[in-house]
Structure formats: structure tokens, C-alpha cells
Image 1 (cartoon, rainbow over the protein chains, first blue to last red):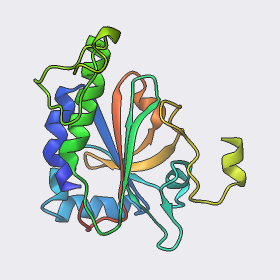
Image 2 (cartoon, each protein chain N blue to C red):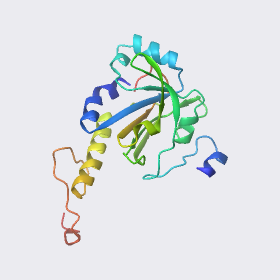
Image 3 (tube, helix red, strand yellow):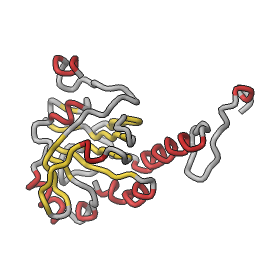
Image 4 (cartoon, chains in turn purple, orange):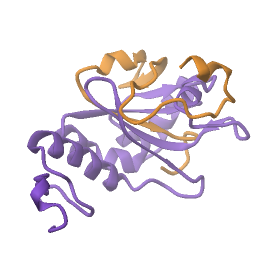
Length: 136
Length: 58
């Protein structure tokens, strides 16, 4: 969760907040936060999903391991899922892509423009004018 | 979500732009044990990070 902590200020700037969810107990979360140099940087709630019910509801439950997959969801202010990704067990998340995606959703909503491949915050979008189809 | 209950446990039961499944769970936050639910975040952008276990990498 330290990589998420690193980008947390970026998320706050975009008006977002975060929660992290695992099947650990709140007691494990407490000790994790107190003893891990990385976890002590975590500025958001660590939720305890002991039964895995939340992970099941989100379709990211690993039945063989009794733990959730490394999955990320962006939920908009109306409570709708706007993005999700699930990583293989072997690989950690690219948190910068998550920030980019959130910024892109917000940019698209604010401007009505398309957000092209490789777009980064600060770059222009693409007009959705039908006359431009095939020209950009 | 009805078909979700009958489906295998790890079945994906939502689509993009559909409502996020509600939840309520105990949480550790700022030195305290608190209850956190999805409804606490309505009106805000929320990122949900599932991870397998404390003391593992991201």
C-alpha cells in the first residue's frame, strides 16, 4: 500500500479519497500501520473484509488463497464504477496509470473532449466533432 | 445483484458505469477502529484498492 500512499496527494488534488481492503483483521491492520515503514505512510482507512464478502461482491475474490486479488476501482461521486483493473498475483500496480485515468475521466467530463491514448494531465484532448472523424 | 448470489464466489457481478456494490466493514484509521461504508463517500471520487494481505508489496 506504500505505492498508493505515494500518489495519495495526487488523488487528493483530484478531489478523490481512497480505501484499502484486505481480509486481515483490524488488529493486523493496526500493527501493520505501526510497524511497517511503508504502511506508516498510509493516510486512508484500511478495511477488514474477514469473510471476503466485499471482494466477492466486486468479483475479485481468490478462492484458492482466501484473499483478494490486487484490484483497483474508481467510483464516481454518484457511486458508479468508472474504471477497474485486476493485476496478476505476481505483479504490483502501476499507480500512476490510476491517477492518469482519474484525471482523464474528469478532464473528459469537464471539457466534453476525447482523452486520447497516452494522454497525460496538462495535454489537450481531442474534439468529438463528427467532421473530424478520420482526420485526427 | 440477484444473480450474483447464485453465482460462483469469484464471479464478476457488475459492469462499468453501474453502481458499485455497497459495503460496510470495520477499519483501522488514524489509530482508531472505525466503521466504514461505501455510502460515506457519496459525492466524492473514491478509489478502492483490494490487496491480498498486510506486509506484502502493492
